Amino acid sequence: MAEKVSTKDAVERMSAATTEAANGMQHSYVVGLKGVQDYNKKWMEFAQANTQAAIEFYQIWGEVAFGVHRTFDHECTTAAYDADRADQGTWGACPAGNPRGC
Image 1 (cartoon, helix red, strand yellow):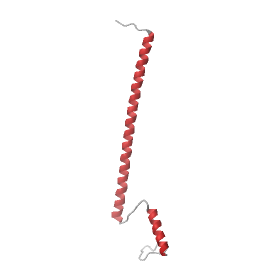
Image 2 (tube, helix red, strand yellow):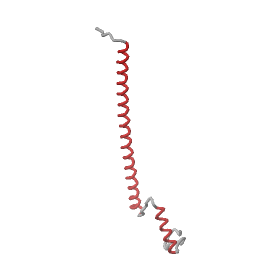
Image 3 (cartoon, one colour):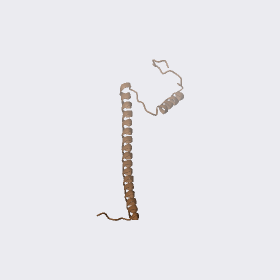
Image 4 (cartoon, one colour):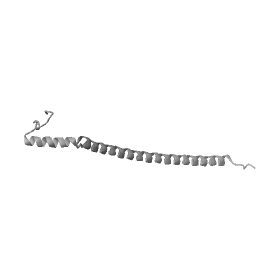
């Protein structure tokens, strides 16, 4: 037999069920968002490590292939070299044996 339920009880039960469903959906969204954030963090760590490895590879490859040591502070090295040449009075002079003729 069907149980007789008052309108007030029915509304309270529906409200409780709706609240429970909403809480479940909110929890699943929070868990999903956390998963996406973790995935993106790992992806960025991988991309950074991969980029660093590529930079190191090309630095080493450039040293081996061309016999040149290249660094990111090339400007500082050039500035120090130029300052040293200026101290020696050879600024603007062509080094001996330079085939390019400065």
